[in-house]
Image (cartoon, rainbow, N blue to C red; front, side):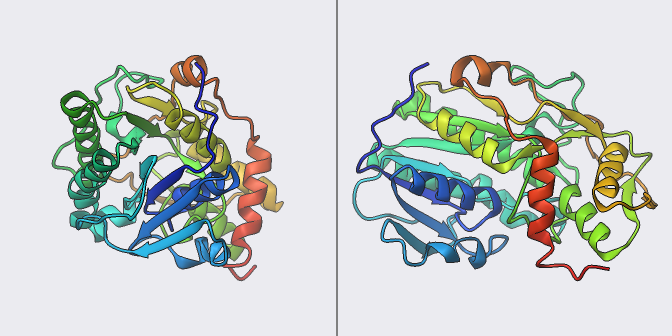
Length: 321
């Protein structure tokens, strides 16, 4: 598929722009010559993720909760709706805000794209598949989600965001994209966000045992953030409108991941076992055949390289034991 290449004079709006993945997307868009307007209310994002852009004349920042209506002056060519809490700790602490990010904020971002006649891309998630009954997960799978569980505020918000996106596409002819993001890691993750990568690295830096839930046999596949951003940007410039998985299909168990982190630090693996949380998916691995075929995309950053970069980032935030 031929991607849009003429980017001169284009403007992109990125909601949640001070967050982990969105801030890396902002960097990529600016590097490719776009003007970028980012919005964030810093509920889970952080100013340090975009502070290096303060003097960039092509970058504008608006502090705003995008679950409330908003507008952007001038023409807009792309709207990336990336704003949402995205960690297990967030689901428990701010479930209502999480629901609003997928519902009210989706409509506000969609309305902006419609008004500006812009291409719209929503950051969905592998969590729409729930605790999957098929493996690996392909886009045609409808999922196995507990609509009233502790994770439902995130899972169902993202499923609603997908439904809203397709409704605007069908009812208004809006050019829309849906990317289903699988486990992603890299610099700018929050150390305390409850996800396994910062949790294990933080514990290793502090010399603590690594917390493994259940027997550690549950699996995840980890995609480095620059690979994910490349997939998102390719999808935004394509003419494909149905969901596309973006993630790394190299799957490992939580115990294998803990062993890999211990190996990087040259230490013996010590485990702090905990009960498996409710509705925690037992397996997670993307089928990326669609991304390969349509976008010519697949991950290129090795696990060793990505983890090394991520560990170095966290060294500035954790006193080494």
